Length: 192
Image 1 (cartoon, rainbow, N blue to C red):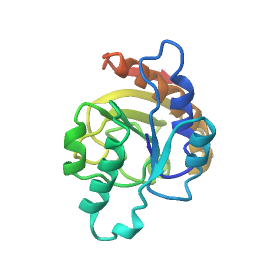
Image 2: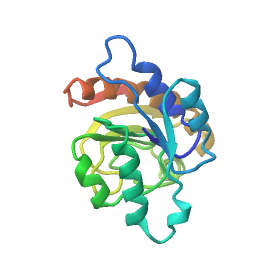
Image 3: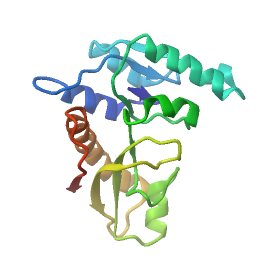
């Protein structure tokens, strides 16, 4: 799993991978050495690593090569992006085609990129949510594997909306991963 921050989605994924789940966490890698998710993963007994992107400023290919090498050291079958705040190039994504998932805080294809909750509120949308999708070289694109929808309420702010969507992320991503790891790519749709 790749993270950049607190790792709340990583924790939800890792906690779900027990019993008859077809996947197990093998490593959590952050691009930020201060990512709290590294501590959380270590406390769960999951190996951790950091490939800090800052020393690679201006050399994305070198950063991605270091990231690929760190992943190769752990041999994951599926790569889950869980709050990984780096855009990955086609050169990184292509070897993982059909084996890399991401969760995005909008109902894709709407609101790719950042500030998704504010954009949904500003547009007057009746609902927002999150999407789990296969990662492709195009930003926040790829086959949709699941979505969770939450009504936008009068007076919502980006923060209040995000607070209602986050528990749905923690439910949706593990559900999709379990199905995906078992070979089922049919979309999961949840309502909050």
